Amino acid sequence: MIKSKIAIVGAGNIGTMIANMLPEDDYDITVVDSTASAMVQTRLDNVKILALDIGKRNKFVKFLQDQDYVINAGPYFLGEDISRAAFESKTNYFDLTEDIRQAEQIKELSSKTNDIVFVPQCGLAPGFISIIANHLAKKFDTVEDIEMRVGALPMYPSNELKYNMTWSTDGLVNEYLHLCNAIQGGEMVSLQPLEGYETFSIDGIEYEAFNTSGGLGTLCDTWMDNVKNMNYKTVRYPGHRYLMRFLIDEMKLGENNGKALKKLMNSAIPATEQDVVLIFVTVSGTKGNKKIQETWTRKIYGDGNWSAIQLTTSAGICGMVELHRRGKMPKSGFIKQEDVDFDAFSSVMKHKFKGIYS
Image 1 (cartoon, one colour):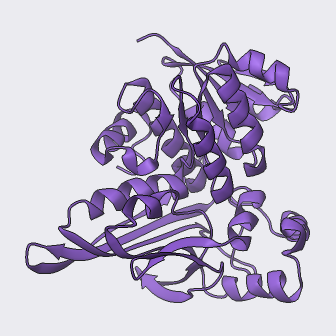
Image 2 (cartoon, rainbow, N blue to C red):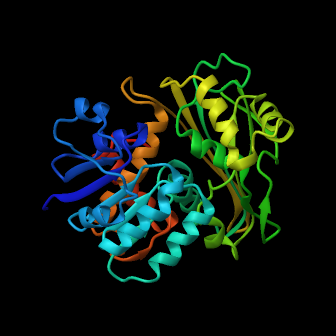
């Protein structure tokens, strides 16, 4: 199979990991950023670096016209500009966004072309979480509840928040501030972030979970008529949610789209690559005449070179690109994560992407 040309927009932690993870025998890779990234250059001799401000629309579109794929690994607020450039250049588009409004804009854009695919919300959550939840739920005759819990957590929490930065501050704050899609009693609802508090333990470790925005992707729309209750919650160590509510609500740091909160967390909360990703999906319903509950859970750790959140997020989007490249999804249109066959996705993970999720 001929190499596919792929542009990765964003040379941060996830963009760099994606560039490392994509097989060089299969992809001709260019990383695009407003400044050339020394980090990418020193790690990857086979990856081209293009210093380009995507705000320069004409130059960006012209560059994309020679690419088969573009992956948006930049901040979520760049999604509209990058997806529109993909539309204008007829370049297959994939992203990691958890922003609900942005995903709707991309869906609308996809309805205007039959030439390319738009595949937003790849990665972990949204992303793989929808693939596995859909896979489990389809085994049931009737589905009562679909519950999804995901957390990217430091292995050695040592501050009052019991948290270290493991991924994008913009993405983290965004999911703490915006309404959360869910299904309750068969009705689509919007829930407040940081509400729906619960606690649980796995392997003797205590966790808390609460509503956050965007993790469900399009799964609510897909299952609206076939499930009674569906929700997604982010997992943290106990005490985190209490302090975040204090900062956001009482200290008013959530105002102006969380600008002050982002600044505070970037300056005060250290990053870590020693993390663990916890995935916990439970589906209950009936099979035949029996009421059944089925659970899928994983703890995924970093490999010593890359963090767990880098590995899981990057594997999710790389897997989706590879499935399209192999002809395992439609050639055009808006593709939901749950449209993808779990077994096909798992096979790609096993043979191409470090066995993540397998």
